Length: 522
Length: 73
Image 1 (cartoon, chains in turn green, red):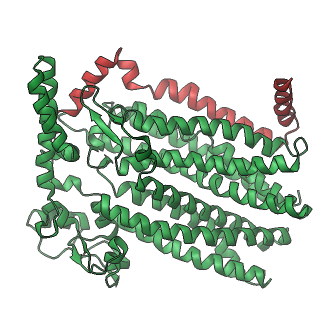
Image 2 (cartoon, chains in turn green, yellow):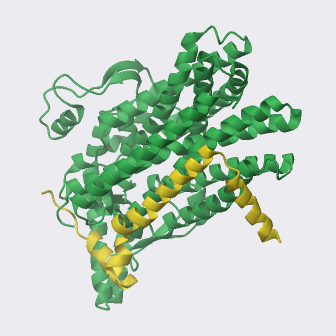
């Protein structure tokens, strides 16, 4: 792996990103709609009002279509781990395998059993048993998400494991540390509540469309009431956990935070850019950063926009005077603020890689005391292990794509703020029974489905693009994680996957539109 | 007896399904077929399982991958 085939690395990344983005079209609706279905069915169970049964059955149909098309799309990601990311798969060992296995078993048993009761059991089990099944589907599908996000959280903040140089893989030392990894827990809540937000926007959007078409208006309004309250609570939880997420990123992935905010030079009392553009006058931002780091820059690198004074320091550390490191501080180090430079970490990582090589050599030659010495060196420098791979590449490779991360993050935050206002407006309009007159709000509601989906995907891009080049934070970069395949093979599977899943998506949308057009009454 | 009940539950559920539901299941079947019988078998082999016969060989392979620092082309 002396020479990197960047084409292979980037195509492998693109393929994984495409698969994850497609998978994430379906998952949020499953997570959120299942809870709204449970709430609607509970109302029906409590009141016995047939209107709620009709509402429940309509949304259940849409839930079923989405679930059926989305089911098992995530398995492609697991295929890719074995084919495209085999070094990574071996390196993570059982830490990644255990949560995914639990997820697989749980998803299979919970979903195949209780979803069947949801769809087939209306006249075969009691009302109570049906209601319990609906709640179990909601809880089960959300617990499935927990295990996936535990695995993802570990990649962002690897804890609870020890690397075994004899097997060349990480071994789990404490399952609870992995499960209760603060990054994983916060990420789980942030992800599922944002999924609830999108689902609420979906219910409002479909209902708004039906009202605009003068169809089943009463049922649509009742659906809107449930969705606007559910969505309002969900977006508040998303904002709170988003704040928690920013604090964790500041602690564990400071370069990601710097990229999210386009913060080049850190400061105390750092402002937050509410709205801005990550470009400067002459050329791209990243080029300017590279030039500046190389001492070639003629003008200061700065992201221009509307700033909230002290905002970033408060967001990151709950302290208006806290120091927030920028890209330059992280790359060059800032001894005054206790920040080690990337050059220092690269040196330390290189020592770790060499110690590992020497340990393996000494072991093969049966030199136990020498092996022990190298193992100690390796352990002392393990936290910087991944940086060692950048020894001959240059520090600029350690900077994530700033423009993509910045734009994704800021657009997501703006959309999230709009959703909070939007849910309130919808609730008030339905409560006052004047939503039919507010065509603009109904039209915005229909567009809300797209914006909800967009915010979801942008959140994922912020989290994943912002942590580049790491596949496992500080330990394994993408270029080391990737399997040695022919780039053309990856391009071919990329194209195949794109065609198959686009066809499936079109099929889903068509079936869904037909079902929506039929409305509640059919 | 219980097995028979479970079987009938699923059997009747699928039998009484609407035409749209059946169409959906047809799409699911195609998807699963493409995923497991085509993509998995022909395009997504497990590299470490297929190219190496034992864990010892796999460890040696990973070792080679992880202890060399990459250069810029």
